[in-house]
Image (tube, rainbow, N blue to C red):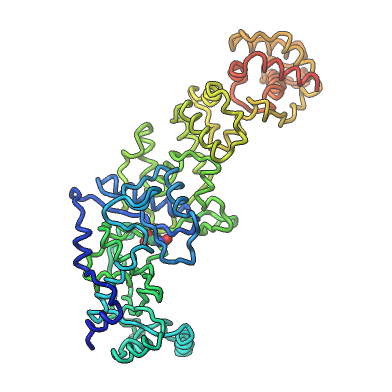
Length: 556
Ligand code: GLU
């Protein structure tokens, strides 16, 4: 068979050669050891935690080594395309501080290795498919869906692996005349890889025997897998490649050194190895990341699910207002097993000083835990100055929760509120994420203030007497000590123990203790029985608001 002639027959419009593209996209001029990584999301409109998890690994590997991190839009599956999805991808990654050096961007492509959108690269893929056809390594296949279905039925009956390979690949050995005839008859066709592999066979020892491929994965170590033997589709009827072919051609021409992608691609790795080999390209370093898991309702590990777990979507973190630094900090704890130890030893170091490695990445399931994220977030927010946090909350609210506009009317006030209790020896860790913070500090604002908790049983009946006495003796200029001494006096006057331990010793002698009395005051002022230091809060609220709140409770 004259494969060259076949290639010309199938791709007359392709005049460029692979060498032309090799010249157009030369090896990158980067320092020794610099890594080139990419993120290749599909524009489905849904960005999930797995994307971000991989993106952090990509970003660190590239930027830690003086390399390049680029964005490629993988839209070869047009059924999944959602309008505006590219903007969503760029925006949501930007929110988490993931910035690309190169690739698709809001203002078009940046960089010399584009086009960075797969659907725009048809002629490039076709050029390399043409090369494979011209070397007898790929062929047109005219099997219809129906015929493929019949083959599958036959294979099921014979207990054979389903698929198009070996004797089932009926178009594999068609003559050029047969092909010409089918094309003239207008029959649609795909291009398939002509695989050199063979299915494993059962030997006399009862074991399966077959050739294997070994790949060194940077996360998983050596992978030893059965070789590919499928005549996999590389170019669809539309002239658009499948993921397999696009991956191989793009990562070669864009000079990717490290392919970080999800474990769901492991089963097709042997196909990719065969394609790299047939095209004469060097294999990149694969880094197959672990599946993100969580502990399910039944206490067992399970995969995060789009339907059940809102926290799988990146939108969740943005709309709840998790600070990107907190998410980043948390993701690093699940990305690298030695990160937490490093953070403990270097509490104030910039996160980018941590030496990220693929070897410390988990290869079983990476366990995702919202409670742990919340804990990490509390610590992270403590490290952000209150003025900066206030500004950040403001921009979050403008985008996601404009109903909290009143919180930002007085930015100095907000800064003081956010700073409450942070300087203590054991700093308060009340602040977790923006939506929670809005609720947590809600009592400062008349718009959101309400009495949420019950008055303590011990003092409920006396609450008006207590509040009246408090109002009468209130002096906004009292220091913390004087202020508390007055509360103690009120307590004693009303029949409460001055110290909790006196009450505990002789409960029959008192109605309660000073703590019950101060809780009455706390609830009147804040609506809650738990809060940061009352004296501090009063100083921030100002005298008028303190008096107004007590009066309102007296009149209720
Ligand atoms: N487009 C692929 C996906 O959405 C990317 C896989 C890869 O990074 O190679 O999963």
